[in-house]
Amino acid sequence: MLFAAVDIGSNAGRLLISHVFEKNNQMYAGKIALVRVPLRLGMDVFEKGYISDEKIEMLVKTFKAYELIKDIYKPVDFTACATAALREATNREAVLKTIKDETGVALRIIDGLEEAEIVSHANNIYINKKYDNTLYIDVGGGSTEMSFFKKDKFVASNSFQIGTIKYLFDHVTCSDWDSMQNWLQNVKDPEEKVNCICSGGNISKLTSLFGNKDNTISRLQVKNAVGELEKHSYEERIERFTLRPDRADVIIPAARIFNNIMKWGNLEYLIAPQIGLVDGLAIELYKKYKAQ
Image (tube, rainbow, N blue to C red; front, side, top):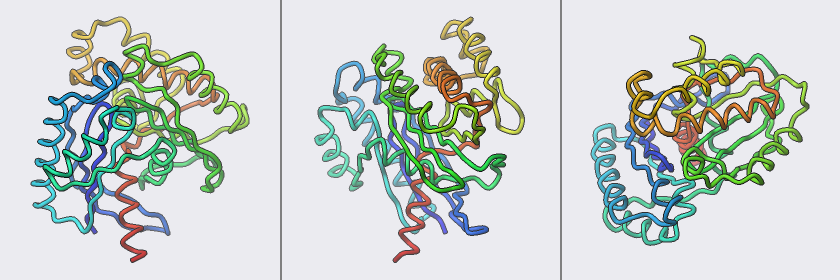
């Protein structure tokens, strides 16, 4: 069955058209189409505190474009969620009303813990879980979400005010880092080996540039990625690593965040199966459909 989901993040908006199916009692969201728009709402919110009229107009146009694509695929159901940037925007209610009035879409803002839970529901049939326990990590523009599972049973999740765009604007505090470090060191045994499944465009790009062909990247490779990326200017990163302009500036903060997570969690490698919030949202829609 086809389902459509939209994630309006701090760096980009994403529409996923997916075929959701079950295999061996697990639900999977297979990508049919993924359309990404570099909205960069976080550049407004984390600098000025609100979303500008220009960005609101971009949002409306984005949803109108998404509606045309949805009309082609005719999904069974549709949902649209927004995360950190809209959560923190002082004019968020006005933005939601404008989108509803102009496009008919009821955009829903989700909190960090709900975001972590939804992302952890996103599976991929090709993930090879070597260990019993799994840590899910999603590094976004405005926040980082993590969830820990023991033998596929939920244990704990947390949302941290640490994101790539916030990092660029120097809005990540020492207490934010301390909070992340303490949570990682308390949620798992320091010597325990776990699967680390990461979502988001930055980890996918880091893995393709500096990692391995099996979509994994080691702790040393992440550390080396930080050093290699820092050697080059913004313009050089675009040319040398074939990065989009809206990826070239946030990829260094992303690499540093992942480097800290791996160091504090004593993690040996990360898996980047190219999943994200939209995959989890599609699975949520499928569950809702089954329940009805």
